[in-house]
Image 1 (tube, rainbow over the protein chains, first blue to last red):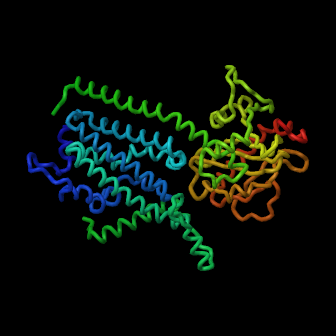
Image 2: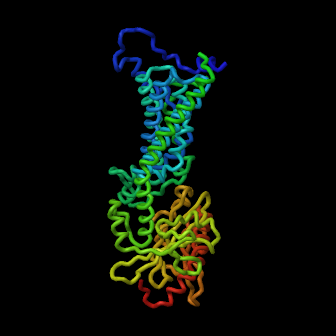
Image 3: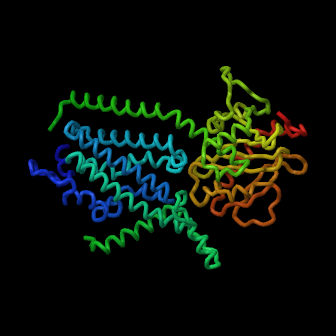
Length: 236
Length: 249
């Protein structure tokens, strides 16, 4: 019973055995990375990982840290799972995957606490909640369990960046519309509304809606709309 | 492929040992660094109540200023200094966990008091830690009073998860600035604390009122309750030191 489930859920990107050595960045491997960025994006197409996309995207900088943390966790959990894929007993594979993710997430959280305490306070529980980010576990179950380590790393980067660019775009607009600034806390920090306001001689009002999660939904919706229009997606 | 039960159990045990070991090692290895970060964070908050430290980025500079200008004691509800706990261990004010203490009966709590000395050996301001509940989770504050132990010199408020843009604004300088110069005693010398009002843009505020934050009434009420509760607990200490015209160490 459980073996059937595994076969169905595993993607069909299985490497044919004993072929001539594949180039490091073959067309197939490039697709592993590029697919999740657009056509198979974890957030906008698969609609996974929404909770953190809403929760940590109030400002750009924390979102950046969150993105790095998620990319780190996806890449390394993919790698570890792929390395162990032949040893992992099928019946407890979900628990094993969860243990791998949880270990990496705890590591990230501890390192953040030691080296960037302010960010640790801002991200708080959300770093820990990477464990429940469906994207990570989805990749382990669907890809890393059936593919070689190198391909799994590429897949991790693809999905990680696919997640990252979306939440960074959401954060950029939420910060701009909700706070009137861009990139607060980084060297590129700029008070857009303040400067534009004094240039025009008026006071620009920020929109509190975008500070709330609702703002993230709105922006996410617009991104999905643009993406579907571009890719010619039709609802069946 | 169906593995035997023994294999599965051994695999699980091995996995637990390896991962558990890795996590314990990191945790132990990073502990000193993490403790230092927490210490810097606490001291930043304490200093933040009496001076503007937003331009100081170097944590060692913060620690330097702190060590030079701040002394601390721990008192009980009667305003008496306590040096040792029941077990005879020395109590360090910076190490007192305000959150854990807040859960105790006010009579049993340890209250740290920080004294800021600009130069010389006269106390310029007293900093009182406070702790309470906002809308979603805890809020905390360091209230700095001038040496008359009546006028507010500054306040540093913090929160865990107040709504961003609404209640979370208590951490903004523009909101905290509203407390500066307010008084905790009325003219008859009775403790009245300071109240944040409902709504924003209130006119004609008296010495014990500050303008509120629109959309964050409950957070404001939380701050009010926190200040009032804790000022009552510090009252004995305040009364004692107020009568001394020149409080010295």
